[in-house]
Amino acid sequence: MTLRQLVEKALASSGMSQREFAAKVGVSHGTINNILAGIQPKKITTLERLAKYLHVRVDQLYGQHSDAQAIGEDTPSYSGAGHRLAQLAKDLDDEEVATLERCAEAFIKATPDVRQHLIGQLKIIERLVEHESGFPDGRAPTAHKKQGSS
Image 1 (cartoon, rainbow, N blue to C red):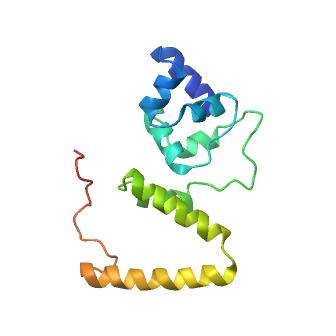
Image 2: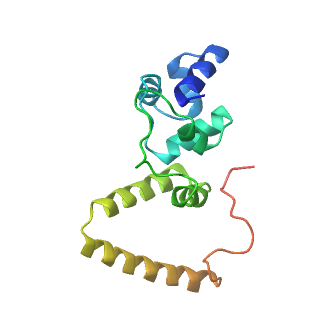
């Protein structure tokens, strides 16, 4: 089933309007309109919210997509690097995810020299986090839990 079909089915079975559905999922009404028009969302956070609500894996939203704007061979697979990023971001709040998205967009637009500089700055940050936390990966051995979650 395509993402479009999953959303159509969810709308039909819930009896919700597109706006209500969008609010429930945590995406914009425009995103739902685009999906119903066959346009696949680009942001991993949007895909994660949809996947969670629709009870499917993120890769299934891409892997079974067959609408007119089908995913091309150059679309990244979220089973590799994207999957790792999604796992790292799962404990972040919306503001933190938005900050990372802006950083990634800036990095992508940067020249190779600027990218190398940013990579160097990240290595410094990694060393600082390791030093502050006392753990090699910067995280304590207990699982990180967002404030207010159960």
